[in-house]
Length: 134
Image 1 (tube, helix red, strand yellow):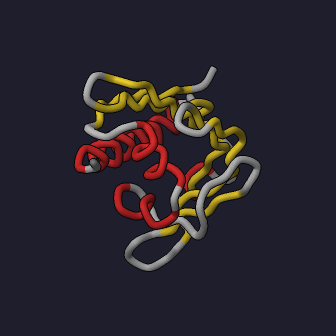
Image 2: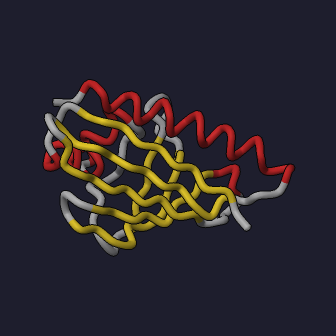
């Protein structure tokens, strides 16, 4: 059994605009972490700290259906190399886009609960940053 984080956010932008913020290196840095390159299916990615350029999170874009869905393998330093899965789903919504995030495969031991809480809080904040896009 593993922990899963689920988040949804309504955004005041169309799906192509939201998709661009999920995949384009220069836009990822505005709400999440800067990327070394645009994210594309079958390609590894590296997101770095805005402060010092250190590696923050990395993985691979496992699947990408433009404007609709993207799946990442995903890890961060505290996961000690354990790869998790992040699914992004975009749906049309009156006046904008509904963005759903499901981050699965997180360790479920009591000693790992603090990491799950930290990731949950992080995703909450990062998705909130997207409210300003148009």
